[in-house]
Image (cartoon, rainbow, N blue to C red; front, side, top):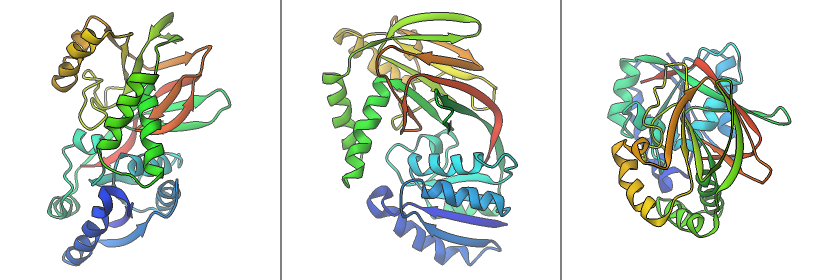
Length: 298
């Protein structure tokens, strides 16, 4: 087996570096050809993964969080002939992709996966903007409130701050500043206009480190799971929060869920978009499901 390890040295406040050194000491015990590479700039993981895919590497393993994994996945998906699998040893803040497959951020767990590899093919959401730019979502895409939080948190990350606290402060800032917007969207032959706080498009069930915003998502059913959240009052928020942790958000009166293979969204005002926690521009966008597009080592 040929394996490329992509390490984000900033993930987990440097925990990824310690994990990598422990892995190097242990990896000699198993018959695997390994290359260890540290990311040096934004989108570096994308370039590394794309190159690995073209060179026929069997698996790319990310030592980092959802952001680094998102970049690596996009690199693999840029190769239309990709057969390279993706995996992660999670040391980030949210780690929602890893949680979907119960992947642990421990050397022993990773060694066991490498020695006894199992694979799964999951769906991917392709996002296209009005200018033809494309990106891929492998966990969840947020539109509106969620994207505002992600953008605020990413600004803090660029200044060197890490940890769950930046997401809490970003959420508090969003509550004060972000206002619901009108959007127009088309799916399953239906045209609609709604005032919404947030919309999530999911392959996996959770975002934000375990918040079950798309509890109806199944990673290999060939559908985008959509959760629409209408404007919430303070009592609504207090009622909805526990449901985010129990998978019952869809039972709230201000929440609607449905499935689709494609959805287009636009608005007359600026509405931010994020995918897997990374900035993905603004509306309008078209989201299309790509069934079984990503091979994952689990």
